[in-house]
Amino acid sequence: MNKDQVKGALKEAAGKVQQKTGAIVGSSSQEAKGLAKKIEGKVQQKVGDAKEALKDARNKV
Image (spheres, helix red, strand yellow):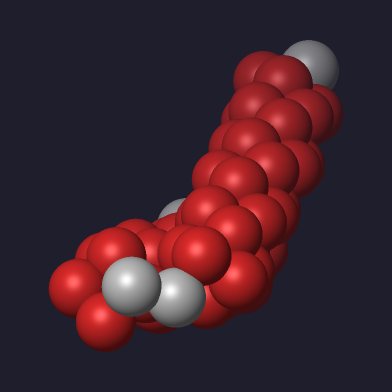
């Protein structure tokens, strides 16, 4: 596991919380910001996954 995977997971979790909180209090802007943060976290995790895959492939060669 690398730092992008960890940071991405944390960012995604924070985005989920922000999105749910925005929904509860009726703030569409907070909901949108939370969704954006959640998506950003998922993308960062995928970048980390790709880095890990490349590292694993290099180690096999």
